[in-house]
Length: 54
Image 1 (cartoon, rainbow, N blue to C red):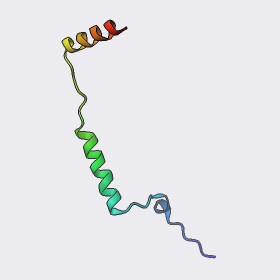
Image 2: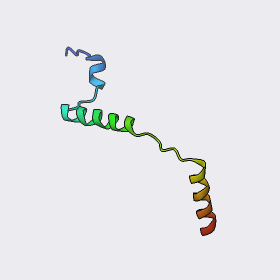
Image 3: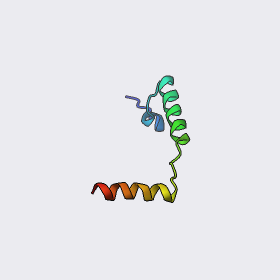
Image 4: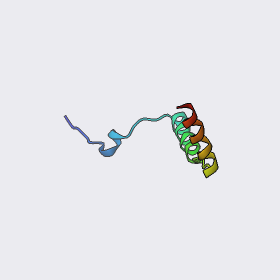
């Protein structure tokens, strides 16, 4: 038996072009999402509401 090692290729996942495009779009969408920043007044309002309800 003559066995030829394919090296790193045998560990590479098989992805269809559609899957690659979907993963690329997902990464781009995640990069566009920015965490929202609220001002101190908004935090105080939330704390007041939470404290009132407790």
